[in-house]
Structure formats: C-alpha cells, structure tokens
Length: 128
Image 1 (cartoon, rainbow, N blue to C red):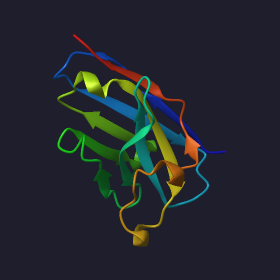
Image 2 (cartoon, rainbow, N blue to C red):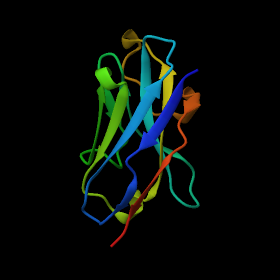
Image 3 (cartoon, rainbow, N blue to C red):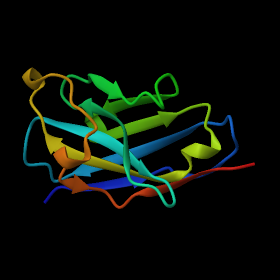
Image 4 (cartoon, one colour):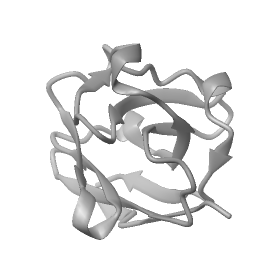
C-alpha cells in the first residue's frame, strides 16, 4: 500500500524559506510522478508543481515559478518542495500526491484529478 507523509511545515516570516518533504513508501509501480498541491483557508485546492520521479523533469504553476523548486532523492524515496521568498498568500495546507507516470509520457502536470494517492498534508503559515 502506497503511503505519502508530508513534513516540514511551520510558521515562517514573509520573505523566508521553507523546505517540505514528502516521504514515499510502499510504491508498487516503478515509474511515477509526484505533485505538490495546496489549499488555503476558504479556497479550493490548487496545484503547485510536480516532478517525474524517474527523470526529474519538473513543472510549476505560474504563481510560484521562480520561488519554488521541486526535487527528489531516490535513495531516500523522498520528494522535496523548496519554497523561497514566501508571501502571506502562500499560507495553506500543502499536500503531496502520486500517480503512475512513464517518462515517455512527457513532463507531468499538477492536475488534481490525475493523482489518486495523497498525503495528509502539512500546514505552512507565512506571517510576521
């Protein structure tokens, strides 16, 4: 059974940085993509970005481009979301999710309906 566990959330001041982790266990498929999503209070969940786990290619939504980096450490079965220059509007619960994905399908997308296994989320609060 595939399980995802997010960690690394917390309180950070505007302009600060934070790195979230998504630990993956029990994956029964060899090729997959991992995406990060977030849900702010009173808003719908939205994609942040994603990574093809095998080839490492990434895609980001426009609102976070240049401020976030998604990476993975295959030896630790972990995907990271490095967030810089954080703003109060980045405050949200951040989720990671996984879906089977082959490299020859191209760069994956952070589209919610394509991911069927999710972590429990980690709270990020950006406030002075």
